[in-house]
Image (cartoon, rainbow, N blue to C red; front, side, top):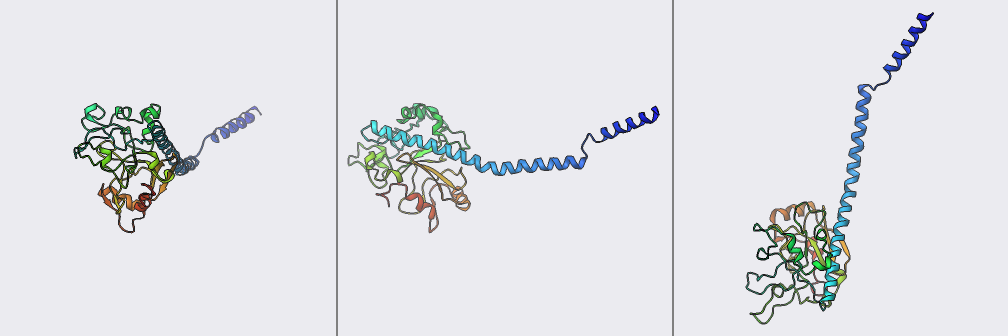
Length: 282
């Protein structure tokens, strides 16, 4: 009797130990489910992450646009220059007196190789209005290691050529439709671009961002960091994201570089042109 009971207990223990693990097929099924869930999370999560980075990029641009407004208020309505140095350009004209950032090897804000240093931000007229926040000059979408991702609209903060050839400032030479030294000369602030992400050579964004207002020519290109979108801030401090590019256009622009002529009917160029200086450039 005891022998029979002992045998029964051994069988029960053997049965329990045999069912404690997973078969190979069960393990493969579980692993497949986990892989599928991870893939789904990646597919769903990537647009969410991209949207979060886009929102932060727009917040940074809004900070710069608002700093331009406050600077103008403190400077008798004079806007900061979109140029990025105070040194004379190749024409021999005097440099901009109030560049929003100041890049020059002479003052130690550029490396000898042309890489922008933090000092270029600190020596720009907007630095005191940015609360010393160097991170706000850089887009979270920017894959490079540059400290500045944004450029100002080259149509704003500039003026016509001075009649005195011996006393010309650089921002007076870079005029695209009329004098906009003063905030009051920007006729439609809510429709006029202030900032835009740009990936300019050699290692920083030189001067303002510009396209030819008279032909479908992209003199400067936007940064291609956010799929088909161009994220900009406007002069009133608002922001917008323009979904106007296409993979084909981006590939053509990237291959050709600056001075890209967009083929007719040039829809992307036409949209960007509307934000240059509405009321003057129409």
